[in-house]
Picture 1 (cartoon, rainbow, N blue to C red):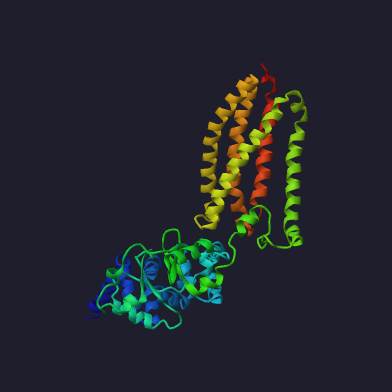
Picture 2: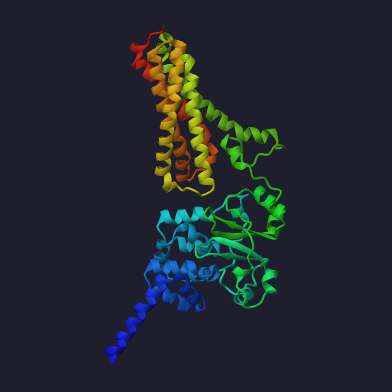
Length: 441
């Protein structure tokens, strides 16, 4: 009899395990209704990947409360199996001190990734949003939704958000519409049209414009995959609507982030002059490279004509790569661990574009100067400089981000130095080595 009972218990556990792994959404619905202690016990008994999947399917409020009370070992296991992009919104619902305690349990690299995902620059939708947004499934009934909403007395809710199993925003419903609907009506039946939403890194101006155009009482905030991150309440937005959101543009060119058009001249000088001095030093470095090849330029004066062409093309290539990478970092499309993929892409783009531009430039140089050697040198130099410029434009902001610096503050100045030095060095260096090929006709 004892043997049979033991067998039955083992079968029940296996069945429960299979249920959690194959039907995480249904399992999450069941666990959602349990006391915290019982819910934690169920998760502890499962392998981390299966438990993490169930956790992500739970209602965000319950999941956040559960995470706060997890033991160290369970927390490590769960967050080792969860994509940081999915885990960050759950942690965001906790107090800052509680978040730091939890992050201290994770490897430093993972913890830093969470800190980056949880921190949003001033003037962005992520900074303005309230992460404590209650989301429902289309299959939830009006009755069950209102029952949950009555428990949330700590927030002012005007709209109800519907998400799918992956947390992607599907619809928003005015609370009034939900409240007057039949109790057994499913929320999905009330949804109409595409919901208005804003990306988590969108500037404040875009948020204000959207709210004004659509006459919204609140605005859902989503990530790049459309997953719900939080919600912006109208009163929060009104308080922040007049603040500027153009700081990065100023910083890229060495102006202070907090400088305004009507700031005092002394303030502007203090913010700008140090970067102008740094820029001057880098310009002297580029001039020194040209000076190394003074004899070559004196013998082949045509080289001086084409120097700005090489430097200009490599500078444009680097700026394009820099702009795309900066946007990727700003919108959280990429993180520092993606540096190799970004670098590989920009090297490929630089090489292909460099070959195309080199053919045109070489043909023009030959037709103008009637020198085959000059055409070869400028063509090869163009490819080399554009490849390295693309690589520099992609890697410089990532490196600055990795070492804890603001990539918007000095990327442009560093890139200009690299592209000038590389452009001059490749062109004049090749010309010096192949000077015997030069013949003007």
